[in-house]
Image (spheres, rainbow, N blue to C red):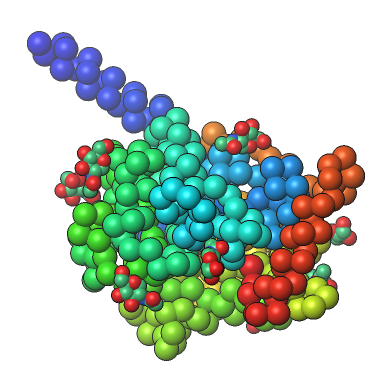
Amino acid sequence: MFLRTILSASALLFTSVFAQTACNNSPSLCNKAYNNVTYLGTHDAAFLRDASTNFNTAGNQFYNATVQLSAGVRLLTAQVHKYNSTSGPIEWHLCHTTCSLLDAGTLESWLGEIKTWMDANPTDVVTVLLVNSDNASGDILGEQFNSSGISRYAYTPPSSTTLPKTWPTLDNLISNGTRLMSFVASMSTPSASYPFLMDEFTYLYENSYENESPSEFSCDPNRPTNLDAQTAKSSGRMFLMNHFLYSTQLFGIQTPNVTYTNVTNAASGAGSLGNAIQNCTSVYSKPPNFVLVDFFNVGPAIQAVDNANGVTSAQGRKSVSTALVDETASRSAGTRSTGSVLAVIVAVMAAVGFSM
Ligand SMILES: *[C@@H]1O[C@H](CO)[C@@H](O)[C@H](O)[C@H]1NC(C)=O
Ligand SMILES: *[C@@H]1O[C@H](CO)[C@@H](O)[C@H](O)[C@H]1NC(C)=O
Ligand SMILES: *[C@@H]1O[C@H](CO)[C@@H](O)[C@H](O)[C@H]1NC(C)=O
Ligand SMILES: *[C@@H]1O[C@H](CO)[C@@H](O)[C@H](O)[C@H]1NC(C)=O
Ligand SMILES: *[C@@H]1O[C@H](CO)[C@@H](O)[C@H](O)[C@H]1NC(C)=O
Ligand SMILES: *[C@@H]1O[C@H](CO)[C@@H](O)[C@H](O)[C@H]1NC(C)=O
Ligand SMILES: *[C@@H]1O[C@H](CO)[C@@H](O)[C@H](O)[C@H]1NC(C)=O
Ligand SMILES: *[C@@H]1O[C@H](CO)[C@@H](O)[C@H](O)[C@H]1NC(C)=O
Ligand SMILES: *[C@@H]1O[C@H](CO)[C@@H](O)[C@H](O)[C@H]1NC(C)=O
């Protein structure tokens, strides 16, 4: 009996000393509070510029959610739209501005892809942020979380209207099986049936996302409106730092500035992600909680995030090319017609002032 106790005690010691589990790719993050970590986020994570979309220039990422997560991305964002189906029930799709421009399929299937990844990666905390473009109710969105199966991982905050004073550590979230954080921008009324859906601006603030030149990057709060830096800081909200550039083409069409991404996503240098993290860290006395980038693999953006977290030897990531994907090669192999039709649609949208 006594021996057995000693044996199991040493087994426990062995486990904790020699087989340290990584949380979000590093043991050093396990005992940090959820709001004390910097997460790499993919802006418009579902909108791909790859063969599946015929290299649609409205796409913001070269690689899908599975590849993003495996490479270290821990926040994924997308826009949810009501899908105008000609027959059958209403569907909720991830569409870029409109479903005729870029339709990435149903919210349910995308959440299912993330859930599958989480099944296989049990020590990772993942955050999803949905832009609620057509004002879907919390019940509608919650149903998609439920039917995809991902709701089994969802964390429910103590209050849907008040910020918590402290957030659980990554370890707590992992051991409690509640390692999915779900934010919606915005939700007019929290859902009683799906209390895990959190209204983004109750818990977070963001800087401006509408930048065309590195000189426009700012740490100032932009949403929610009427929040200055001091108030944002003392409110206890988490900070989501947008860091990507648009480029305005002929007819005022806005697309991601893809050619400059190697500078924008770099760990250091003028206009870089690393530089912006440093700037905003000095404004808010702590690094941003989330940084949101286009074409996350370029830079690679994860380097600046590791620096912010003090992570030097990340574990269990799959590497992904840091290059821009060369669409010209693939374009010439495929048809160009989709591209031209899209260009016309983009032009029409630009005329009414959309951006992506
Ligand atoms: C947050 O991180 C700082 C710096 O590592 C540390 O001093 C502080 O105790 C942490 N707080 C929580 C709640 O994890
Ligand atoms: C994601 O991309 C990878 C690499 O291209 C591919 O193997 C995988 O099938 C894709 N997954 C989904 C769910 O589309
Ligand atoms: C659905 O159709 C309406 C009316 O034609 C239009 O205003 C809306 O933008 C369409 N929604 C999407 C997601 O395409
Ligand atoms: C969104 O929908 C809710 C009902 O679910 C409604 O009360 C609210 O006014 C709507 N907001 C907008 C901006 O349409
Ligand atoms: C873990 O889950 C239990 C039951 O849902 C809850 O009471 C507890 O507060 C959770 N712990 C943390 C750290 O979130
Ligand atoms: C979510 O789905 C489960 C079955 O998978 C069901 O038991 C539960 O009632 C659903 N939750 C809601 C709020 O509908
Ligand atoms: C991308 O941004 C850089 C830096 O502002 C600028 O020099 C370049 O012209 C932009 N490219 C496009 C296509 O807008
Ligand atoms: C970014 O890519 C351009 C074009 O390939 C190259 O000239 C430039 O040196 C690169 N900049 C950085 C910071 O890697
Ligand atoms: C960082 O702040 C400096 C000084 O205000 C500014 O010149 C620079 O453009 C900022 N860089 C970024 C990426 O925000």
